[in-house]
Length: 276
Ligand SMILES: NC(=O)c1ccc[n+]([C@@H]2O[C@H](COP(=O)([O-])OP(=O)(O)OC[C@H]3O[C@@H](n4cnc5c(N)ncnc54)[C@H](OP(=O)(O)O)[C@@H]3O)[C@@H](O)[C@H]2O)c1
Image 1 (cartoon, protein in one colour):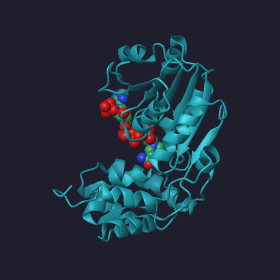
Image 2 (cartoon, helix red, strand yellow; image 1 turned 60 degrees about the vertical axis):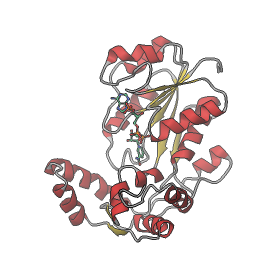
Image 3 (tube, protein in one colour; image 1 turned 45 degrees about the horizontal axis):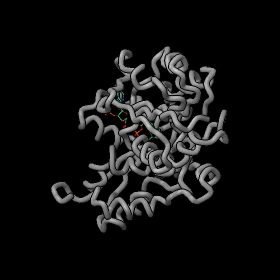
């Protein structure tokens, strides 16, 4: 494994990617973060932007943005450019939620001829400050998974595992399913957040409430029903079990959602609008 060539982090300015980049830099590993606002620019929708970021990199963290699939030919292009290892950021719900774009990407990575590792995180703890942020700040979150316990995992722990897969040979050919140290229902997770902010956040895990909210938010009916289908399968799976993979790879416990909630509340992420 070379150490003088940059590690390419696709999606390197987002929630997980920026943390991967920071951790690699802290270790003195050369890094190239790539996205639509980096120099050089990288855009999945513009194949002419690909070679510029691939050139000279021998390892890459491949994080696809939400709703973006892996374009045919991208991995072959990476191979020709000299990339030898790909670590794919996938999703622990890939089968149960039917995430076909990531199932396809996993297949492509396995068949690419490159060294590979697949990282499959459960729900990020940080979702509560990204796409669930406004609902949490508003005091009511609706996700149609009922009381089933989820494996919320901290993005910092995902990034720490990613760095191990990129900088050692210990996880080649492995699929790493990442959860936090405990499984929690959404209601339990929101209780931790409520205790940290001093403001209660109620939870509604019913399909009816979710359908009503998403429809009121203007989502097309077929999109809402597709989302409900995935969540219903996740609810039917029931409680998840922590995998212990974060602990195995890092040799320390993963961060408990309670500790995330305390830290995020102190940053003011759920402060009522206008008070951040
Ligand atoms: N949230 C969860 O609980 C969860 C759980 C498991 C797996 N996942 C998976 O994790 C991924 C999302 O990770 P994240 O939350 O860290 O992402 P994120 O914060 O949304 O960041 C997306 C990154 O991709 C870049 N990007 C967006 N559109 C792009 C384009 N057209 N071309 C090139 N780069 C582009 C963004 O930068 P620019 O916008 O500047 O281009 C940014 O660096 C998704 O694949 C999701 O399915 C999520």
